[in-house]
Length: 138
Image (cartoon, rainbow, N blue to C red):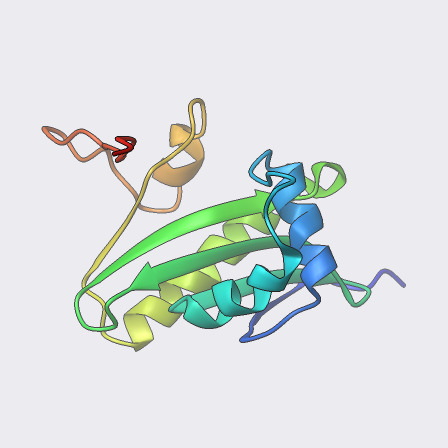
């Protein structure tokens, strides 16, 4: 019998497994320190891990003020688990956790070609707004 994939909201997890997920998403830089993973998890409003046979195979997190707004980020699934509903499971758990905690505004910035996925989960394009990132170095 196959073990079902489980989604857990956590405040700690094996750093190397989370680093592997960041690498799978193309978001890990070798100058980053794995010791920063635990503070990253604990500093998140919510941190969800998708687990198969005890191993993290996906993750996502919410950063928030805890009162009004939440931002979903860092959704990543190991390549061999993609297109199996794991991302939907993670987003659903994060949305449920945000709603239970009273957040009324939940947003994210979608990667190119992922907009349809988020539409199926209730997200819509935020017309008239442009995502920006600070890059100026003084």
